[in-house]
Image (cartoon, rainbow, N blue to C red; front, top):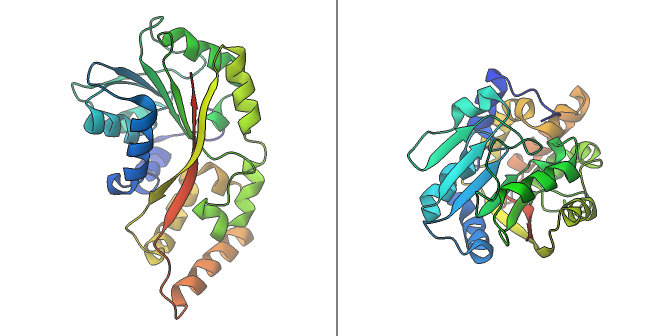
Length: 249
């Protein structure tokens, strides 16, 4: 995972401010249900599992067995250990898993950390059973209009410009034998206010790849945009964020 060194401080910050509250993921739950058709007999590989937000969600939502693979020791320490969640050190290019051992793979905000996307696609193909889906939650260049950070900190687009595009991703997975099933935007929501976000934004900056690239002046201007929105006489819109779900088989 190349773009951030996820040490103990960064992992704690990620856990505190980057995880989306479970109530805000209801649209993701339903989108995943449609494409995965989950059952308790399934095993899902959560690749680049981070602090375990989705590992626990898949277990709680659908009763799946989850294999969480994460390269950062500090991030792995944040993943809850349960009877349904097993945690391993590894990354998408070198999965410590047997051939054809999983019924699905999940990658959430992982693609931009991978150094060789095509090699990762072949490795994912190796560990999936025939016909198993890959579900990718990602912000892709050119499809970021609904990303909340872009509204307040538009310079974050600079970091995203060299992320893998939809075409890059589909081509890499096609080389490993996958075909595109679906590409759709999915909304996540936040119960917290813009004022809450402003109070957390310095911590958020330390744990977000795109915000780490901001200059201090760009960060200051973004906070000022937030302050103006908070002070506006009209009620701010509820906070939400849109990312893509790309499904391949």
